[in-house]
Image 1 (cartoon, rainbow, N blue to C red):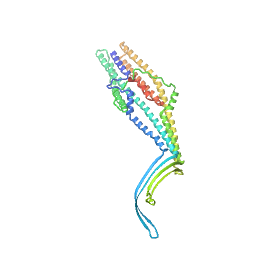
Image 2 (image 1 turned 30 degrees about the vertical axis):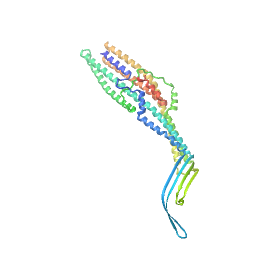
Image 3 (image 1 turned 180 degrees about the vertical axis):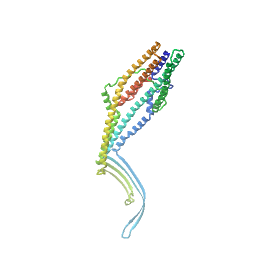
Image 4 (image 1 turned 30 degrees about the horizontal axis):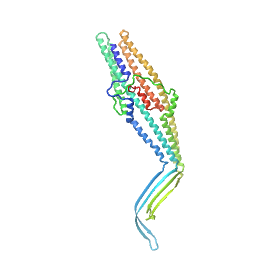
Length: 449
């Protein structure tokens, strides 16, 4: 009986160590899921359109420095009574005529400090949009792998729960037969039945977890999932590169896209100050115009006038009710706020960087320790099986040893998955995360091996 149970456990071990549970349909690989998420993830698609809108800030800012051209045309029918006084009495003319006026005007800013500030502000806003979009793209990788790993882990837990249930079912049959033959005890039957009932509950919970995890991943990739690539049986952690935290810190300060975006936001706030300060400065424009008028007024009745002009227009602001000074003070306060936000963002990034750096290092140690725990659990199961044959242990001891074995396999799977996530999140915090890192993670799964 013990040998049969141990064979069931070894079958479960083979299923668990590959972290794959037989499912129908082709498995969805990690890189395939990434390509699908690029096309279907709602949050990423929103980021694409947001970035497209952000590209227009630069164009809008440039427009304040480029010439503007406008044209006007007006025509109307008029009826006028014109009375002319004279020594012979007033004379009234009744006139009915059509007037027409057409003009075109070109305005080119020559000295426009507000427009210059608006242009630099637009450039900074576009750069901020690009940095934020880069954050969204890196975040897509992290979210995808997190959901993929969660689904794989749930799939692994279901495989383990089913194997455990089947093993307890076989164990239950064995102890019942032994009780009927007079070799077993009622306690063994009750303990095995309790373990079996608990395993049935665990299978139901694991099935719900698989369904929930897959639903979350399906919402991101936009397609139904029947199976996922299991984690490879061969798992080797990568050496930390660079090994020194200070080097990771330098990378984060130079490349983290969230910090870069906030720096550009600081630039936007600074240009907002300059833009409002320009409210006290004069503006000089070059104006060129051409117009053609016919009977434009009653005084130019039946007269055609074609006018060409070019000149300079100087506008000097004198007083605006204090609005300019108020706008400057408001912009200065917002600039200080953006600087404080930058410091806060930098601190948060460095804290997350340190956390993921430590987690990445500890995950490697945790994997090694859990592997030792797994080996010890396997030896304990074997030793307990032999002790039962020698009459030194009971079947309850076998069940407890097997329970430790399942827990060891669960902990090993969790440690490996946490290592993969910390590997990505460390690079995300450093701002260097890209598709190459995702491809490295994909090699840990069976299809990428």
